[in-house]
Length: 276
Length: 314
Image (tube, rainbow over all chains, first blue to last red; front, side):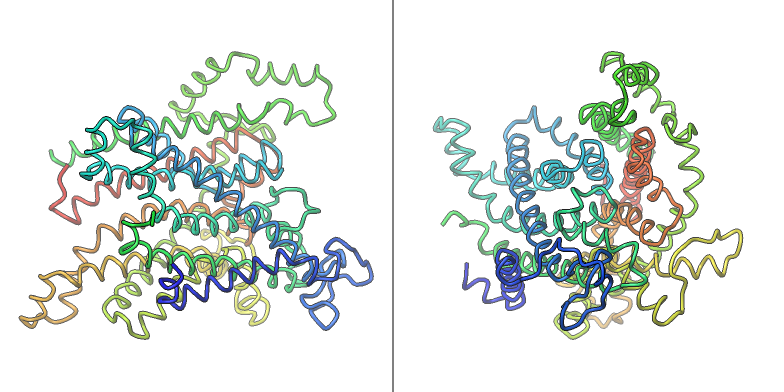
């Protein structure tokens, strides 16, 4: 896999940037000395300079420190959403692909969920349940699940016709075993690619939720919360929006470029032997 | 006759999806919490909550509430706002102008620019043009629309002072000012959609360019523009149109964000205001409205296929 990535320099670069961002966010307590929630009323809305790399926000907090800790939370949310989405989406897709009876019902439900704009669904869910880590993760996952389910279902439908699957079924191998040993391994390559896109979408959606004012507890810095707090002072202190906004964009960009590279190297050549 | 049978078949296919949407929207509110408690607030006494519940019909069994909800929606009755008491449909009607103007201008702008961009990138595959379009596409795909919006405001409204920062002027009041207010929101909304469509256009045109009939056309000396318009685009059109339809979901989500960034009094803004004031009938109504627009547009696109590609039969 490493050599495959090297073939695509851009994707390799994306992966490196992503690794760097993850490492930096994990190491936030060591590389950032300022406290992200420490308020200095006399230092409000200071432009970027030597003391404050990204300036300070309306409460006199260090934007750099907030962004560093914020990316940590946002990346964690992204990872959790990937976990939830891939697990539930794969289960749904496998069930739909394996059973003709369930297929119709499950896929109509997935179509219905997909017809609801993701942001609206997430906003409604979070605001009604109340914002917490769990509700934000669930709200972001729900609109993404149908995409994963459809992907897995399409793989199942094509693999189902393969001679080795028919042979296994003909030999009387139990259905769960066929799914586990023969069908699931074929889903892994497309799922890895999909996971990268879900990760990017989740980070974006968290930021949107925060920005719209329905993200979770404002004292926790996330990309969304930082941007939401910057909103009222945007015209006076654009750096409070621009710095976290660009870093958010860079994170998503790195993930997307990495995902594109993965797709290019996994899709045509790698798809058939992903369980190696 | 053929188109009529197709229409009926597609409608029959869309109905279960619509039913799922209606059910999901019902469940979002009923399962995730008790609307009466949410509405009454944390300080309310149990008696207040109970009377509110009875008043809203929330004390009836869930199945009864669901059937009533289905019946109302089927008749086009989306309920009334708890905050203002106005029918939800009327609230949407009041706000639709700005939303429609914004989404249509973004749609037109996108199709006019993104499709030629994608075609050019594929035609000049692996050249600077292609790279530039792909780079634009990846970046546009990754930039959160509110960040794009703020950067545009910062650049064009605050630094250059060419365009107004925020706000909305009705096209009936003053067409010129209305357009000036619409430029930045349209750009904000279009960039994400453009990257999606440019990317898909490039991919599907590339695929057609490798077909034998394109090589034949080239070999017999058909002018490039004619190859593009008659041979390539006609064959690449179906996936492009499909993505324009599917991308509508992103466009709608983008409308919600863009209207918040630019303070536009549209349906997206209505949604967020309703969410923040816990006005759940409005939230339900608006989600339903957007979902139905999405389903209807994609239904129309299904019908368009037959016109674009005569080979498609159902």
